[in-house]
Length: 115
Image 1 (cartoon, helix red, strand yellow):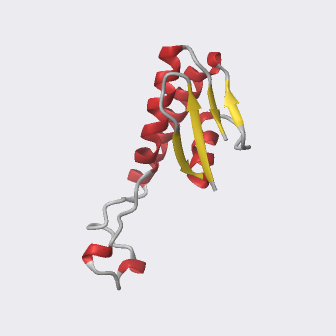
Image 2 (spheres, rainbow, N blue to C red):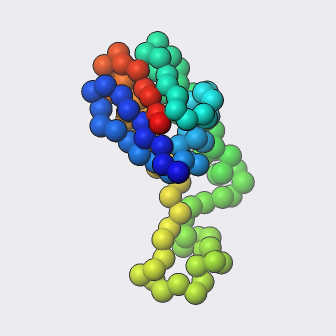
Image 3 (spheres, rainbow, N blue to C red):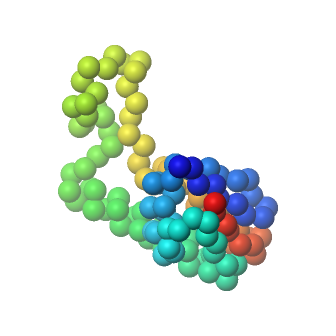
């Protein structure tokens, strides 16, 4: 399943459903699709998302979890050639387009919807 985020004054963003729902939850909203955030709630949603991402980064650091494949190779990738290897993309990187969309919505005084 794919989820697309829309906001006036910004390009649409499409993400895989599980990642998008996780980010929606981090913003403090129900993961149901479709959904929306009112203009007056965007700033708080952005703050919640940034705070939760920073918290997750700190927890990963404390637990020694890293997304760097050179430090912790994935055993499932052992039989892959170098050109077939796909590094894991962190949640903070996946969240950047949504953070940009939310910042744009704050500046434009607009809503955000997803479907």
